[in-house]
Image 1 (cartoon, rainbow, N blue to C red):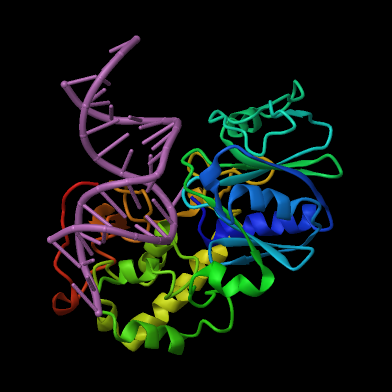
Image 2: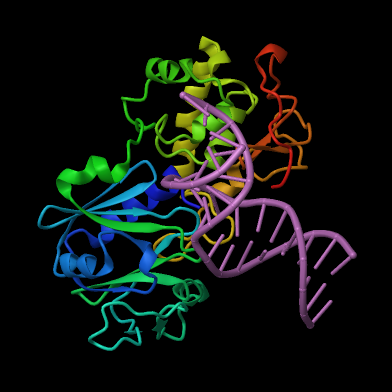
Amino acid sequence: MPELPEVEYTARQLRASIVGATIAETYVFWERTIGHPGVPDFLAEIAGRRIEAVRRRGKFLLIDLSGDLLLTVHRRMSGNFLLLPSAWRIDTGLRESDPVAWNTKGPTYQFPEDSAASYSLESRYCRTSFVLTDGRCLLYTDPRKFGRIELWSKHQEQEALRGLGPEPLDDQFTRESFSQTLAGRRTAIKQVLLDQTVVAGIGNIYADEALFYAAIHPLRRADSLNALEIEHLHEGVVAVLTLGIEHGGTSFSAYHDLWGQAGDNYNHVSVYQQEGKPCARCGTTIERMVIAQRSAHFCPHCQQSPLHATLPAISPTKK
DNA sequence: ATTTAGACCTGTCAGC
DNA sequence: TGCTGACAGGTCTAAA
């Protein structure tokens, strides 16, 4: 689910709400959610830490903790955070001696009668919960269980982030550096945009949207783009990510912000999951194809490609 | 060296 | 109503 705009939006909300708070207890309800270190060490290390800062890098949410520790969160497809007010009681069903609760249905929570339905729905998929000393509770929910939460020493940040490329909304992401990165790449530009070592934070929604913005066909070979097209694509990447943040992220069904609200960017997408609908620019029907095992959506009229530079369609099967 | 299936997971929706 | 298959915001690994 979350790409850069969704993670950035969450980071801003967390920064405003939990910096300065201290973690009292942590409960893990799905062991594999904790990617590093093992669950017992994770629980022992995180107890009593103060939350000093909240940052974002690519699709990673970074939480700096006291004692030079770094908590990294990658939500993958369906991970989410919910912050419960302190008045809300939680009942994890844990015995005090249990380091891990083996309850795949997640803990049960007692909500005020007037609480939003989305809270109780999401909490059903709680994989990890952080109880703060002020009584509030930060829930990490993740229906598909792909997301990972890891704890590292602060000096291990580079290792934890696995060679991420430049931040697209920072000065380091320039037309020139982008151009250099694309130079040696013979694969489809859509696939290259999804490579986190090329640019950090772009996912399937914003890759499709950026290519539409720049009027570039998703199958174009990356090394075939001319200077003007690279300029447009660079501009498009920045524009669609910035708009996504301004709209509070893109929500389809499951994504909600810290307080259970849906992001509005879905109402502003041009091509993503718009197959069969008319292009807002020219009215041509939006098409969908599979590139690198992912859906690609584009306008066949606006995003035409010079024949010499288009890759043959790859495996038009499955998905 | 690339490229591509498969794995990791659960939910939803369309079609029969 | 129930079953089946396709598909979903992502990334890693093994095999071709």
